[in-house]
Length: 231
Image (cartoon, rainbow, N blue to C red; front, side, top):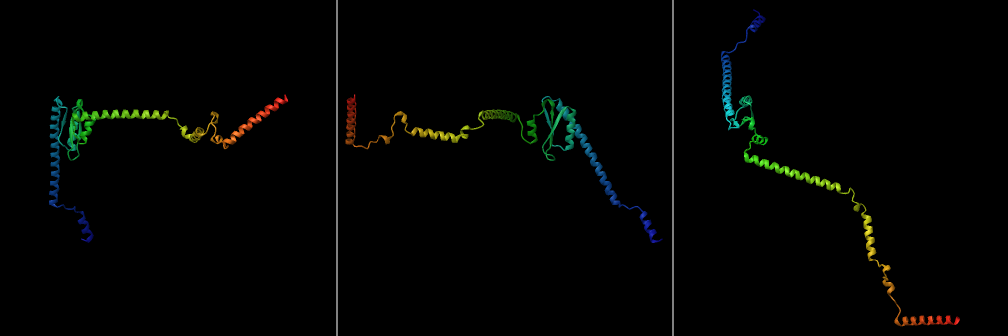
């Protein structure tokens, strides 16, 4: 047989698989199937138990909610399906893969939005907290109303104000008028009989003044005498 024939003959043979590898693969497949069956059995059992719990909860008039322990997403979905079938609502809270849990609520006793937010944030919730939040919201509404009234009052006040400040616009004229008024007040008013101090000064002596008076009388007498003679 030539070399080419021997090569072709070896290629026609299928590749051989080690017996140990076959056993290993078989065991892995069996373990996978076993795990799947175990998971299915766990889910079936959980569903049956959950249906009993939800049915009992629905028949209890004293309870308004039922809290489940932390569950994975698959089991939480089962709880949610059963709750919806029973006419209830279910909400999940907590951190995923840490402490995520679910609570089933009856529709006639659903939580308010404040309680849901508190539970989602991992905060405590009770009647005292609910009353405090209601009082806080009422106070906020009052403050908001007062702020709105204040804004409206300020708006009306601004509308009543003139657009232009005429005093500032004509400030230079007002200043000039005030200055003139001040000058008129300090200036001597002659119409009321006041004589400037310069006119009040008489530089003549007493003797000269008396001589001037006698001279005026003499001239007056001479004038009257000349007038009588001519008549």
